[in-house]
Length: 372
Image 1 (cartoon, helix red, strand yellow):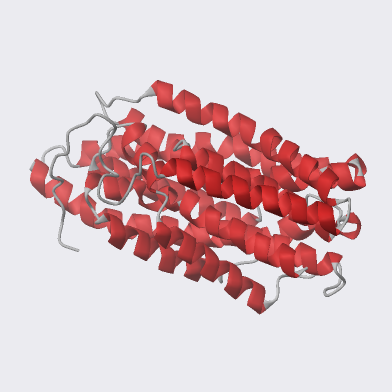
Image 2: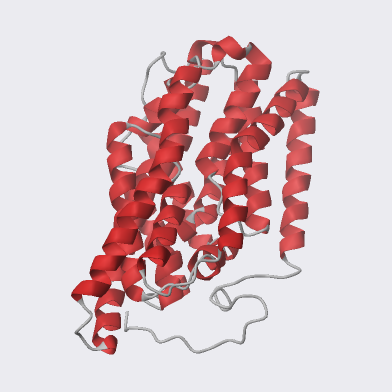
């Protein structure tokens, strides 16, 4: 159980730096916030958001799988699948869904370990698949309309005044997205740890997460967020479309509304997909804005692959780990070695707070910033 809890928190750490871009990519791209300040704000608000609700945690712990048939080995294997997929997509700078990686890993591990009947496919479709299809489209539409209105209502104002005002507004809208992200994503690891406690007999079936689980998950995602997933921040802030302050404000506000509504309803949606949809809508909402459809296509492919790829790794890990302590040790060793290898590869072409706003081959230009 200790190994499972530690692995769950390791996943939460990767979730934090993998999804920092969701709340802060556009604010960093427009210069509304300096990069280090942005990730610090996001980390604090992710921690605060973790305490606002536990509806999503209950969905994870008892909604998508039969918690009475899930073993600690299966949970461990599912987490390994999610962590490795997060690291692979982070290395190539693709904003895939940490949430779907987690769900895929768990589904694959439980399917292999307990059979298909232990997976509640009806709940998977209702709580995961349908929100995954609908939420980015809704966020895209909301951001498109909001961006059009933002430019229409301010078209007679001086450009400098407009940019300054929307940059200030972005501080608030980006903070709201960070709070919403903590409300939704931190709960997923809470749900996994709660599932482990139920499987180990510490909690009864149907229990919610204890206070220390909420605190541990919130602190871990906050630290991961502060580390900053700069590769994915570059893709979402500069790679998908050229973002101006009105667009950033519209994308962040629309995304926060969709995420908070889903958290209230207990839908464990992907905040990454919502925020990417919001940024795409903001790009489409400004006349003459350039959307890089090649980048959008690669992101869409990663979304399609996330659930099955994580499920495949989780299933293989569950099959190996089920051979006893030696199997668990082998899976853990391979996971650590793979993580170290991916990190070493990332150091060949590092992306940091200093070059996050510069696309490869682009000459650095000074970014106008408002006083923080």
